[in-house]
Length: 464
Image (tube, rainbow, N blue to C red):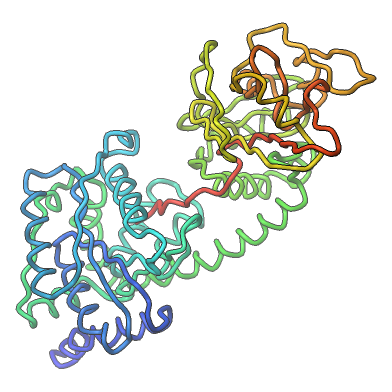
């Protein structure tokens, strides 16, 4: 029995190397999240040992969450360790206060992942984390206690993409146990730091680690391994649900919304699955089963013109003209808002939550020469604005134009308007004043409006 246990920890680098070889190509650049704890210290040593053989480079990042009074000294330990091993090292202090509604564990995790993504940049192929099989079992139990679905119960994948990033997330020790890692660290005479918060069973994960899993293992030997297998099977089920949701989304969505009538026709279970996937794609926190069920109830029972607005962490799900829309956290309206355009092709308007595009087009859009006759500014509606879009057309109110284009009322207040001097010359994405349109033989500009929430979002790991 002793020889079997010894072989299990002695071959730890070999098994990690085998797992890495499934994902890495020669020349890969790795960024390791290094906390100074035993798991990440062991993985750092193993990566340093395997780098020449598998031909990858590795650097380490220590993240100071500012939670423990010892955090700074842990950073010093990590820096010295990396210096000894000749591994490039960086550290970053993060603020968890903006994420406090996630709880201390969730806030630290969110801030940590964002810091890793920032440090990874465009030249990192993999962000590497040191979670192991016991972490996976803890995650499954934690998610089960929260009432999670297949996605949450699937736990942590070994290798996954990070939307919006060129890097992938890799966990090469996910098949190893905490005991195997500890045995190898002792055999190698490694040093590591101990986080005093690991003993605080008021933290949910620590409670599961210290109180729940040991009891399960006593009553059901091998429970952690069994739960890891269950997580894998649930991961397969989650993947199939994602594919079904993608197929359904293709059928029921248009532009940036979902057709309510077709969503309801899917039935409750598939509709929930679609809403989960749609929220995920748009970077919106999952509202939870209770709110989603309430949304579906209102979509089914409320009048077709009734206001529906389900909020989640600043975001909201709204219905307008038969479409379900996702709205980002609102920006306070400033009636005196004004920004000057200085000729740049892209004009970020952070306060309005979007980006103006100015695309040169010969003989189309706004006349560049006429536009430049006055200072070019971006403003918001103040009321009573009218514009003539065609030579034979009449002057139209903005309200009428927005209604024709099915722009929801709440978006109209934040829609940028382009002025030359005191003249309203364009409603980006809707039309230009006929007086300022380019002639066929002169340079023109097509101005369009893109809201930030209509692009891709980085998916955060909600379970690690």
